[in-house]
Image 1 (spheres, protein in one colour):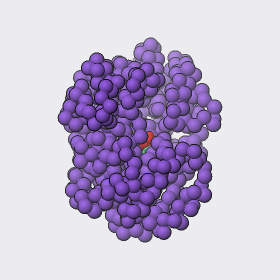
Image 2 (cartoon, protein in one colour; image 1 turned 60 degrees about the vertical axis):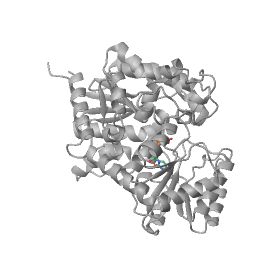
Image 3 (tube, helix red, strand yellow; image 1 turned 90 degrees about the vertical axis):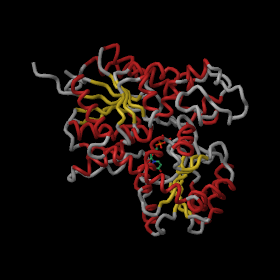
Image 4 (cartoon, protein in one colour; image 1 turned 135 degrees about the vertical axis):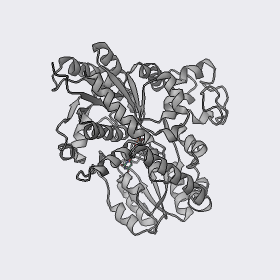
Length: 474
Ligand code: UDP
């Protein structure tokens, strides 16, 4: 009997950042492995991808690729943001899980699915795959340093380090091996700050720390030179690791070999305002700070005002992404931004959503004020752009610490929002300490490029992943 052709069903976390990186993985598997890939998203995400991206025409070059969708159990107008993300996870568990199971059990997809790759936070995918005896590999779209903290949560509780006893957020944390020298309470995920560890988010991650090691392998969106010894710690929990990132750079590098293939226009669910690229074209080389806090983070009006004055007072040009839902209580009040654009006297340019990868690679961009989402962090690292970190939630607190203290790629501003500090940090990054940060950012960008280039470690790890997926299908 002929062996079955390998067919991977990929199920990403239905949020902008994870969709971006997971689609890149899907394309790498089609391009480098010639695998059949079903990219399974929620109906909500599918509609957005079809409306705002060229996913259908782009993937039509891969005959083995299929975009499929199932409901997420939420009404169309649900925000799927902030505190309401918990509702999304509950609905995925209640409504999507049985449909996902049914899809795998019914064997209706052709050729039959032989392996599942799912986001590790969707623990139910591991349960289902194990129950029906299908190989399952977890993809973690968050940072490896955060994943390691998640694995250490039971240890942190046992050692009495969480919930926090000390009111001082600078108090050191000692129970995360490999991070004893620099981790503070304020660098742990924000859900650890709650005095009781009973919240749904905390419980979800605690479950993840038990679920992910049950998978047949774990894919990390990072590269070995960045993570150093941390990977050997994660290895103790997940012996079969595939560190194949940065995925966006990896895909770019593969596409540049296949010169006939153009890259994806964009995977954004929002309309990109490309006028900012023309504005950047008019600015001097390395003169602009790009400001963006990703797709989920919000700020208060007071925080917004501090940012505004800090940026204006710094005297630097800035390009700022302010989504219509960025400022709590000001949803859709676009006249505010039109007015600010005028008030900025040409120094600032404001858009609702930017083509971020292109912005970060633009010659005029010198620095990135970021919320330290993992995709944004990797995109900045690959372009050698130093960062100021203003983390919001999940892995962002520890990512900011690694950027500032471990990798020395920028400054960590977490837990403050003050116009004088903002002004000072912008000047430090772009003037006073500019050379020092640019040197380390350049160095890391080179290591990232090497990892995804010919013979690089991420490239070899991807080849191994593809081989393993093939042998799992026999
Ligand atoms: N992004 C973008 N345009 C913007 C802001 C963000 O294309 O104006 C993209 C960015 O390139 C990244 C993703 O949205 O790939 C955000 O993911 P990240 O993990 O950084 O943060 P999240 O949105 O999940 O908090």
